[in-house]
Length: 329
Image (cartoon, rainbow, N blue to C red; front, side):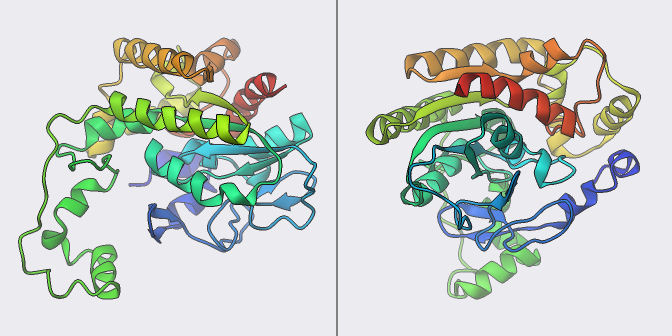
């Protein structure tokens, strides 16, 4: 549900809320393709454009050269750039300016780490000289684990897991009704879904498995991985600007499950989570960066860094991009 305080201070945020996710094989959901406006532009698949000296995506880059070093930014909505005022102020665009290398945005909104991996494998063959993969992620896996009550057997849970589980009860929902019509599920809609719950699901075990695959792929294709733990406002700031305070107060007051779950992410949760990601990255020889610490260190002047609980302002994206760039060099 939109935050009215966000619209008051950042009217362009309505563009992000109005762009719907669409159905996509293997990925489940992705952002809409061929979006064109002053804030957000996507290509024929739904990849967001990097906008620096030129606008490009991995599927739409006519000036790509085989010997030119390439970087891919993987992740969810933070990596995608929710909150950026334009394509020019996302992490991939900032990194392109800072590194003078071609940085491609391969991020998906509302995804988990397994979906991120699947998307990357789908486009791996499009790269000619991939040298670095920056994964800006982590928090969604932790959040989804608390958000989804019944985890599916073998399949990592999704943000929309509960709706998938209750598909028969939600046929009036336009997304699922449209989905059922298109893939001809007419013969099963009146039957009880065959759904097995995994009571022993462990998000850390699942994430460790995904990161191990990432490490194997990077060794095979000879590229470096940087894992940057995405920031969360309670983990990144000690004090808030006037704008942030009003936005966060509204978040706290919302009786919406996502926001209710977010309230559990205190400093104790942060210390345990950060320690896990640091250890699992070290185990797989992957460079690690905690963007919460980056923002807290740079927030000496109480800058406006967050547009909501998880997404950054242009300044916030600039600060984290500069720190990521240090690890690329």
